[in-house]
Length: 107
Ligand code: SF4
Ligand code: SF4
Image (tube, rainbow, N blue to C red; front, side, top):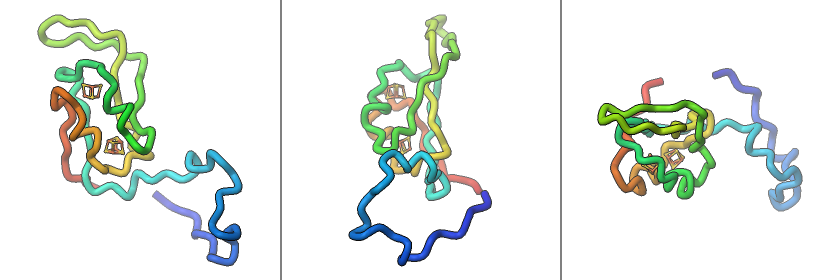
């Protein structure tokens, strides 16, 4: 991923205050990740606890139906936004059915 050079400290706002709320969407943080969560759609029970606990709002729902090998039909899938997921592992810890694998990131 190519990046623009970061601004120098002189361009920071006084006290480091945030003067443009919501600007984190312009700053992808996914390349900080050392470990990567991968949701196993087969095991996932769509409880969305990972969405509740993720500190980076990196869990999202997609309109993609999934049918398990046991024949259960889900109307949506749960995915990770790797542009922003920092790999903290909280979702992995909180998933009640251990449906999230945590593997070493390969860059
Ligand atoms: S916490 Fe686990 S089971 Fe619940 S939606 Fe997330 S991945 Fe699926
Ligand atoms: S590893 Fe952390 S940042 Fe990434 S999706 Fe899970 S809770 Fe969110």
